Structures are given as structure tokens and as C-alpha cells.
Image 1 (cartoon, helix red, strand yellow):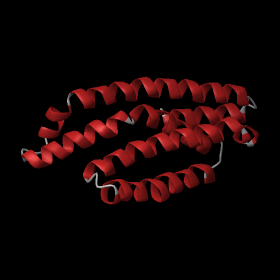
Image 2 (cartoon, one colour):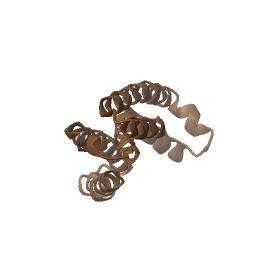
Image 3 (cartoon, one colour):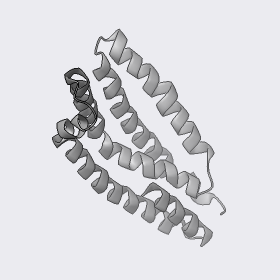
Length: 156
């Protein structure tokens, strides 16, 4: 969905129709939300059978189920974050998604995972929660930048 949105943005901006580009991105966000939410629900409901296909160790299984459920809970946000950040690429802006990814996943998610897991004593669950929080952060940050509309002025 995110690659399709990027293609639609590039095509619409090339046709000098930034409003169509914006509509295409929001529609792709909605479709991706529906798709990833359905996958997320399936992962939450069927976490144990899915993880048990990869391990029979009860300790690993417990961590894997916990991880899959927590991260899948963030899929709805990630659906938007993926499409919005990729839409900048379609507009020819590769700097914005690069900076977003560096900040959200390297400067925010990793220290947050350490803080939750170690400093707050949440253990592995803290690291899993940090991933879901990073998904949400990406969606909010990309959405805020996208709404500013600077990407619409890109000449493609």
C-alpha cells in the first residue's frame, strides 16, 4: 500500500494535481489501516498457534506470544506511518522519511526500549511496548509533516 501511495503521489504531482495526490494518500492510509488492523487482530487472537509453529520451548513461546500481541496492537498506527512516510518518497522528498526513521526508530525506539525494559524493570515486554509506541510516533510525526503540505510543492 505504501509503495502504491508513493507511485500515486508521484503521478499526481507530475500531472500538477496535488489535491489528487493527497486524496490518494489518505485513501491508501485507510485501506492499509483496514488491512493491517485485520492482520493485527489475527495476530492477537492466534498468537499462540502462530508462535508455536516456530518453537516448542514454553519460555520462548510465552515471550513470542507476548511480543506478537503487543506489536500487533500497534499495527493500526503503523498502517498510517508507513503510507505517510513513503508518500514523501513519491513526492521526491527522500530526506523527510530518512529523518523520520532515524529519529523514531534509532533515537526514540531504542532508548525507550532500554528505559522500559531495564530502567523501569519491564523486561522484554518493555522492548515490545517500545516498538508499538514507535509505530504510533511515526504515524503522528509523519501525519503532522504531511498535513503541512510542503511536499505538494515538489516538482516531479
